[in-house]
Length: 405
Ligand SMILES: Cc1ncc(COP(=O)(O)O)c(C=O)c1O
View 1: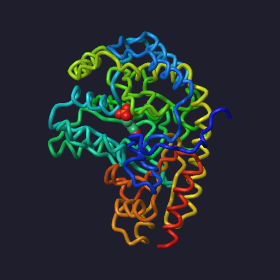
View 2 (view 1 turned 90 degrees about the vertical axis):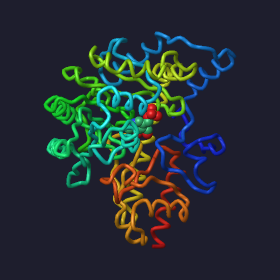
View 3 (view 1 turned 180 degrees about the horizontal axis):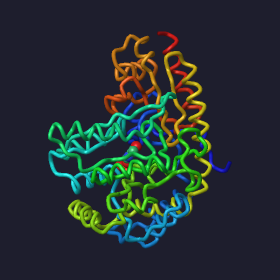
View 4 (view 1 turned 90 degrees about the horizontal axis):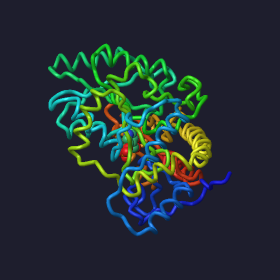
């Protein structure tokens, strides 16, 4: 292995949200931010750019678009044209743009819950209504796609006078870690078409899919991940948002892109970008994306098996703690775990209370499941993207706390 993912982390005092928001003695296993230094190939390119001390307005480089095109071609088997790509300043921001472009104040936006918490915020802050479709679990406890629940949620909202022209689809799913199969994605898109909706697919975790992981396995090919951008038959009602920021840990650079093939959809979304004055690119962000997509593939190729092992070891460890049930996810680097029995044993009323006590008493910070909606109550999310020793130390703290209760 040529990259050292076991290297100890020193991020305190760097302004890191993950590290500087917790006390000195707390191990942070919460926000989806990885504790691995960026690829050295990227650091070299950015350092060279920094040493050219002119940071004035930049032009967008054709190489940036070419890098995205080749990533989609090589990683997901998707053929795109440059005009299909809209550069954006962040995934959540672009989801908000879609909400404004395709719904009106007071409309509903459908989401499959539990789901990435900012989905709620971006809907509510844009004065739209959240229409929740709680996901169904198979006998193993893994989330599955169930059209009937989506239909029912829309119908219930309609009965209350709320129509939902837009649905936000998280693929792979955060926090559940589900990697939707091609039949599931097509079933979802058929639902979208039958209900005359627009779908925006958030595929920011698409590069973290671990092929061959049982019920979550997508079809073979496309590197294990099925991007909605493959589904050209639905292009007239589909926007795909993604970026390099999860794959290469560039969250702080605020850069993403949207794939929109349909001219009508593009005309609807583009004014939102213009209104936000997103024209010239950041000096570093798009250079970073271009570099990661072209020169940092070996880093990601080595990182994925490291993460897979982290996830497997962490799930096995957690499953050894009485009162905890964890699933190895098919995608993402996030573990979803049922903690209801531990909540009760610990004398807590809610997952939030348990997670707060773990932070204060066990000195480990994980995320409470109800942050992802009512359907997440009784669960917790654990970020496994840390050096293995640190991750296991964090989990040992949970186990030791559980032993005392
Ligand atoms: C599903 C999902 N979408 C979006 C984001 C954030 O993306 P961005 O930083 O580009 O807004 C995250 C971060 O964890 C995420 O999990």
